[in-house]
Length: 141
Ligand SMILES: [Zn+2]
Image (cartoon, protein in one colour):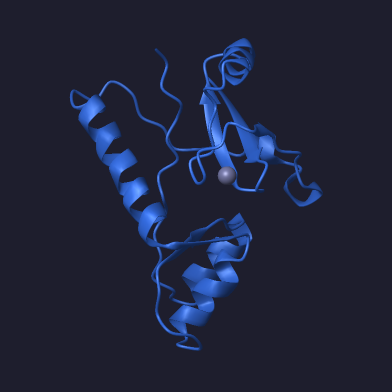
């Protein structure tokens, strides 16, 4: 499996896992690589920001072979869809917005977005009660 950081034409960033680089190219050519936020297939590999230059060594948690793999995967997709359809997407401003909500500077509302490792660590330190959203690998048919 290889992991790509992807971005759509509306600048939504998301992760994609593919069996091979060729599988990514093939799925992209057939329009099967879609943004999980706006569902467009106008996506491309994101350029790595200089600040995350060590992204190649970044580890992610993965699982395979659970007897209920298919159901669990479906539940993760449902969970992700529930959050993304009922909350506001704030992109890279997640940490900033989450902090405002936590410290009651703005009215409480559901948001989701992305944060760097450093921002996540700072949020945990501040006692902000947030949760990770599952990144769903592409289905291989
Ligand atoms: Zn998008």
